[in-house]
Image (tube, rainbow, N blue to C red; front, top):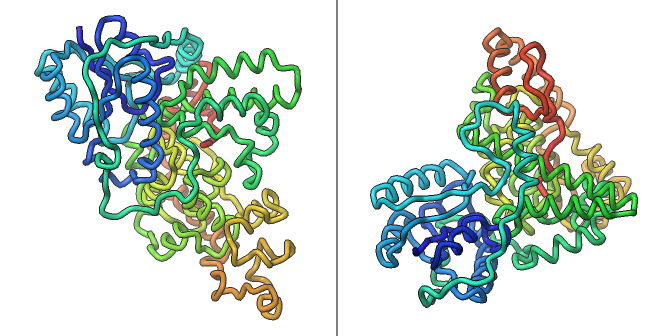
Length: 504
């Protein structure tokens, strides 16, 4: 039996159930498809490919060592699969389930129709603790816990040779008409295991203390997010190995760090389940009572300043410029960027989400849209988080190390003025080579006025719309999306979603 294994966001050979099951039955044709239409979607950028390309090369080396190289083909998935199934007499197709954007969902429906037409079974295996056609969240925790503790798929040790493969990733690389600049500094796509090992060995000791500090989070956070997003590491394997390390650790700080990391891995699947249960949250407010709250007040000039790191608020701008350069940010900075755009600039979350999706090298639709809406305050079941960018700057980057790294125009400004440079007297601006509105922008909104205006708008909106159907919609969101260990009660909504997943 010849089985085609379709690699998507699962670029590994360890704990790979489709590969293992296919290898047990006979010859395997491992395939990755570069789909031109996918790379034209509004939430995609070539900086994603910048990371994927070396990951594919590494996967090819691993599969070649097993006996059968990876076949990489460019074209629509339905056309590619039809051709390959006929050319290699494929008896079945195996892959992991994917919780992606609407485009990949519709693509999978088209593939299912094609394989049904060809009378070829398509077996999809679970990659995360995400369950299709879940009726409600009452038993999700137990289901997730059981799956995450389940046995890993054995690693394939050999593959029968089926066909010789020749491809050139430079020639196959996708293209876009317009795009963000590529990352000037990019995390090593081939260092997944090394990154995990270094975190477990030493870096986890500072995880809990430094996770919200921009200058220290770079090394103290796990930095595993892109490897999880593209499936180079198995989440189930990560959680089991983390638990083992926690159980055998005798150092208190290491135990604390591993415990915090272990917990956040569970939240990964919790957020993916939201998009799996309700794909519409990619486009629409989770609580539809917020429809119209910001959509009609969108200010393109404010959006452009925000997305280019030119708002006049140092920590906001440093975070955005860091993201543009590296493709990564720790969670607090991500949340702050969304909250600032949503409340202080009163921007609708949808364009904000698309810009950030293109920026994040670790972009994962299943986590992204639920997190964006939570920070934008449109879920109806989460508290509003209106971060004060000046207080955040003073608390999280008191010595200005992160700000000065990414805002060279502020490097000479002393700590006492660094977080509010617009308040410097004109003489000091000249002395420190930071003339506001010339060397560095003036704040694009007045902080206090923007906060007061946002609170007033929210208050007025809730007064006008907080009717019985609003509460019914809130209960519906809770029933479908809120995390809980016990069945939901319809008497009182008590949501555990206040802990945010660390986008890291």
